[in-house]
Length: 196
Image 1 (cartoon, rainbow, N blue to C red):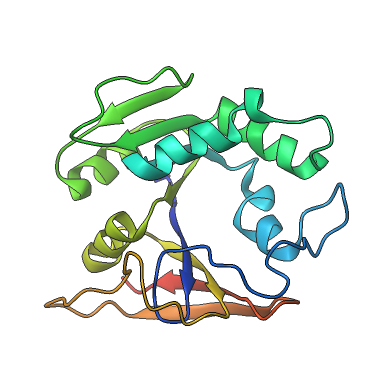
Image 2: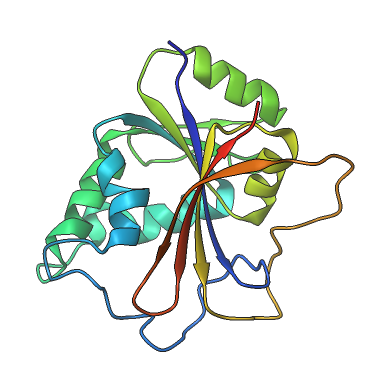
């Protein structure tokens, strides 16, 4: 059975790949030890079935700096420590032509055609795959229809600057809405399946 590929997108209403401040942005809607629904759906519920996380270079370096187990503090919520342990144990694939080496365990660096890389990963043994990257990576995934499903976090901000998710394209990608969840501070969590 082929490995399922999921793409995660985090964007403002105007399609910017940023994490702006807005009322409630820094208030988790879960309690100290339990994640909110957004985090649960996009990550916690997937800990058991995902064995590979694919990131672009900037996302990979940012995750390594922020979510390495050595970056944890004693007062961090339990769910954040659980997430860090998950990232530590899964295979991490960094897509980069510039990065030559990494000291993050269970990591490898790949370069080349994205379609071929995703096809190669799907043929390998293991659990499902999450594509966790910025706008450049995910817009290319959408353009080539490489993911089986997509989780969008849409933040209630028109930001007007920063990297864009949407670029002109010659082909249409049609998605089927599976669920839409309104979060406490105006965010939307949207789950789409890809039409094949």
